[in-house]
Amino acid sequence: MITAHNETDPRVKRTRHLLLQALAELLSEQSFLSLSVQDIAARATVNRATVYAHFEDKYAMFESLIREGFQEQLESRLTADCSLNSENLRLLILTVVEYMGKLNSRCRKQDRRMDPLVESTAQDTLNQFLLNWLKKDAPKRENVETTASVMSWAIFGAAVQWSRSERGKTSEQLASEVFDVLRFGVMSD
Image (cartoon, rainbow, N blue to C red; front, side):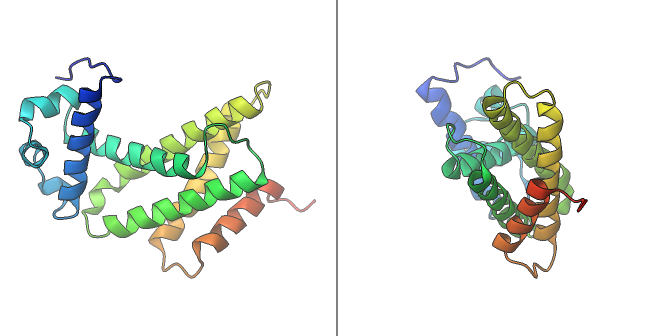
């Protein structure tokens, strides 16, 4: 049972960080499906009740690890106040491609049954990022949700496909191609 916490309380932040760090460390040693909540609690040096006070289960914790890691990656390269322009869109695409490449390389060692959770979490995070970006830059635009959805699926789909392939292209080459499709469209007439 998740307890309501004050998310600004430094103790809550610290405990949550400890739990996610413990999960990340354990994932480098063994598969997610073989982990128990007790394993995570022991690594974080807290009791199981503390884990359940912050997360519903290990799947919710894993989802938070992916979401927060991806958000940090995005925010480390694109500040909250940056605007939607060609340079920033290119950087966003490259960031997503690199993140998915790195994540997929790590996950190859893991059980592939976690892919749907990883991918839905990352895609949703990207969609939210784009939606916030578009609302800030074009607040009067009528189709912001559709635009964010199309852009996020285009970027994310290409990144996932690339991350699973033999990678004949570099991340920069793929990002450039995706940028061209988004910027100039698919129709030549």
